[in-house]
Image (cartoon, rainbow, N blue to C red; front, side, top):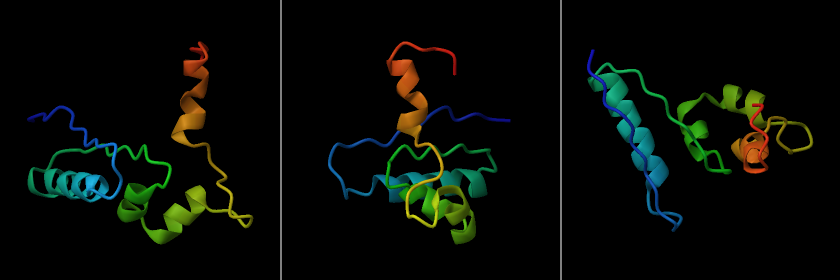
Amino acid sequence: MPTLGSLCFFNNKGGVGKTTLACNVASYIAETERLSVLLIDGDPQCNATQLVLQDETTEALYGSPSGLPEMDTLKQVLLPLLKGDASL
């Protein structure tokens, strides 16, 4: 089975189409090339997550009655590493 490797879409400016491009490329690779794809949504807005998952799944992961996220963000999960704690 062929492997593609890694792709990263990065730009400091918002609104340039990074999320749209990443989701469309991931979809193309999965559907057309029949390869497994891991799409990591590192943006705090979670737009890629909302595009890929059904509304109910997104709400179950991130929603709460108070409107605050119930789940740790990627930054919160990785913060101990930045502080030198490698016990993740």
